[in-house]
Image (cartoon, rainbow, N blue to C red; front, side, top):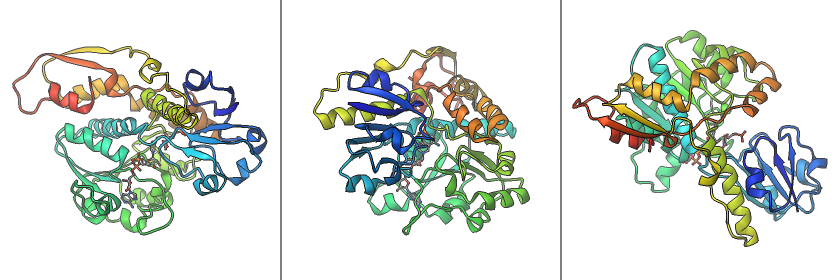
Length: 378
Ligand SMILES: NC(=O)c1ccc[n+]([C@@H]2O[C@H](COP(=O)([O-])OP(=O)(O)OC[C@H]3O[C@@H](n4cnc5c(N)ncnc54)[C@H](O)[C@@H]3O)[C@@H](O)[C@H]2O)c1
Ligand SMILES: O=C(O)[C@H](O)[C@H](O)COP(=O)(O)O
């Protein structure tokens, strides 16, 4: 059996190695000729899986994308061809949630203020939006959720309209899929008009898909509104973001919000589980065995933490400042954007750290052990 896998997908050897012959490919430049004799195709978000790529792949039975998003895959065409397709829902949700939370801590520190006390609006209350909301609520922040689809489906959480969210939120974090049609389409959800509704000093984070914000409108808007602060992980026209926009963002990264080691491992593992299920094979490998012990896995803290100490602790799992600096030095070419993603040293999630407090401080505003557990520390 021939398995074609993106060369930047970790743990493929460990999980698929005894199931067939694996050939690693560059996902961005993958061609129809390379996939024509594949039985299994394992991709990431950079590969467009459509008729042009797989029309001649007559043996293809399974396409797996180790991603949450599916906008790069022509799912209808796969159904028509009777090729099984799976993505990896939720695989990197925690990573994205922690990225958003850590970015807010970083931004608060950079601006000389505090994250505590802010109201945060989450647009899209699915896996990543909920993961971000969980961190924020664990930290005691008020969170407003906007997700008309979930609301219509009977989700019992409290939802607000996008207008209400924009009116009340100090920080807005975007967590929707990219959709081009329908009542709730998200393409340019934040266009010129929406951007002009933002209240003074709003922080806007985008960790979902670049085109959820009209990037040209954002450049024009931000050039006149220095009070608005931006954290951008995703860009219109990736892998070639607009240079003017990178310069205007407080923190800028190359679509790596989901790049935790745990998230990446879960992505490949979900594809492995689905493939075993499809073939009726036993799932005889475990996700836990793939992950190395984290360098700082045991930490003892003396007393409650302040917000700046929480940020220091967070920087052990992910130092956003490093990625921001590297990105600004390399984003200007396709090769630079992709190479930074390829060479990214996958960060860890909070759960990689076992944290104990040796003493409890009797203050009301400190960050205590139960808050840290709710944030995801072990
Ligand atoms: N930057 C990254 O590395 C990264 C990582 C993972 C996912 N993503 C992107 O983030 C997206 C969201 O991921 P997820 O796991 O949360 O997906 P999900 O499907 O679990 O949740 C998305 C939510 O958005 C809601 N939604 C759709 N249209 C909406 C609208 N117009 N207004 C408000 N809510 C709307 C849906 O109802 C759903 O609940 C993915 O589709 C992917 O494109 C990016
Ligand atoms: O949809 C997703 O899961 C993310 O966008 C994913 O993290 C993108 O990473 P890639 O597949 O390009 O490595």
